[in-house]
Length: 311
Length: 301
Image (cartoon, rainbow over the protein chains, first blue to last red):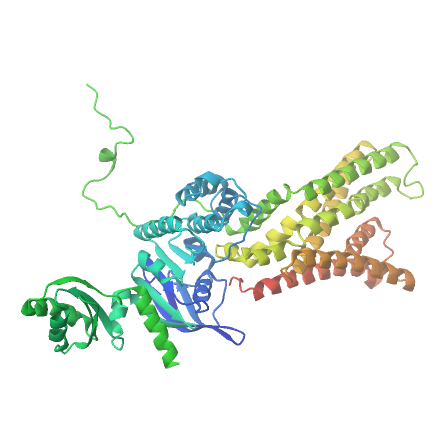
């Protein structure tokens, strides 16, 4: 099956500044988070897909066609990071205009624009000039114009910036619904929690390089150099800790307070399997078991720190 | 007894049985506009915005006033035998040439101001606002975008000159020109009016693409139009070489109009100067705009 997005050895230099370095990746339908700190190359990667930036080396393919290819852009929706645009138009005019540019006739474009603006929560402000919009409303408008032509691939550059918590939740739900409809959604962000609420599929960029790609858990498993931490609350943490410390998969045990212990392991699966057995054998009651590492922040922190260390 | 006919919206009757329907995303399969429509789409939305602006309304009123005055004055002059073209071998032809020249000259200032307002800052404003990202993530080519910007920049100026030409030609029909000759005059006039507006629009778009600052782009455009006009006039007068005047941005089209009437005074190889100047201005403006858009890395293959 042809991947929706395919980068083959893509590098991009802005003069002496490196934007992307030898990035190769393939993405299938669904939601994928594009992660990286500011300046990592996220926007450059997205712009390579929209044809706005031409790779200095390598090839970008969307739906099997090399970008730039005009017909491909009928199938792509893109919400850039910029905040000011077409200030003199109303949201309805702006989105309708871009729908017409995507090939719809005026009536169909107007119908679609209204529907999509209502879907992103701008029903009350359709006919207000964009100049009067708040940051959050602009984000919704950008999202609407990216969706209005019913694209199969939606590229969102920092779509949560400037949104209040309620709006964030709404946009997350909206993005999840786009993914559930079978579209390919690539969401860039440097805020890790945001992405984690939307998807477990991630691409991590750092200093223009592809640092990791895949399922968050799979990536986590691949990082065998990175010790995994499991925090337990138990009735007798010292007894449990002593028993766990004898396991081959456990590299360290730390006690934290009267009922908590933290286990460090380089083989999380084996450790998770062993904990219930050890608890039964020692007669210790385990009240909770969590992993502070099992989130995007930890993976991202580790990956970027590792990359810096290696550099 | 009549057979039961299922209503049109009866899904149980319409849907074939024994099939699994995909609930996944399916592409819109309806009609789409051809890519050749993109310049019109870009221009139409720009015009919609322009027509809301007070400055544009004022300039259109100014142009309308110029049209009304030109129509009244020339209509009066043409209605009085011998008042115009008395010294010409063919007074009717002289009056027809006057119709073309008036539609170019009388509307030059309103037209220039409209291009200055609507076109000279358009690409700069798009660059500044990041509008390229919205346009070029769609099936919009750089060529389509630039043609749209030229259309939107020069469209209203063209409309003013064209309306003036149409009114004056209609008046000429009433005052002695034959329909055939008026059709020829109108066609030549329309070509010259189109050339004037296109050159102003292309040069405005080219200069506009050199900067992100709208005001600077407008200042550059005004400077180029007036400097080229004044410099070529002064040099032409000082050196007694009238062909130099045809090198100016406005002078090249005026010279083409005079050539049609036979009053340009350019002979031999110099007769090609106005046309070459028109082409030169157009190429330079288009090349500037193309170069800038290419640098913005939005060129389509």
